[in-house]
Length: 90
Image 1 (cartoon, helix red, strand yellow):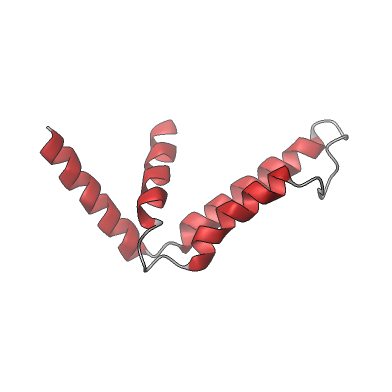
Image 2 (image 1 turned 60 degrees about the vertical axis):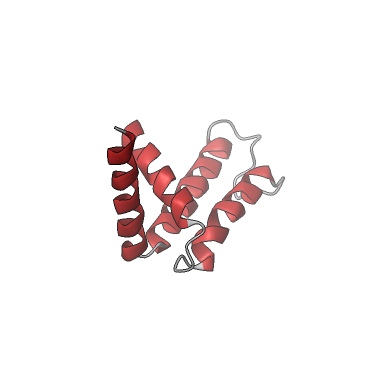
């Protein structure tokens, strides 16, 4: 699971500078961070457990949405570049 998360993060980072990556895919993680830092919540944090769970659910949802907005051809190109770098490093 951690390997898949790490791979997804590397793909996301590498696709950030690609012109084919839509603005929304770049903006959603920033929106997620701003929501976490905002004092306004859907469920107030003073309510034990539920207050934090809504933050986590929104964070995960926005990050997954951002990753899914990245076009498949961009993800494929990034994976190919990673494979070339891995082979050259060995």
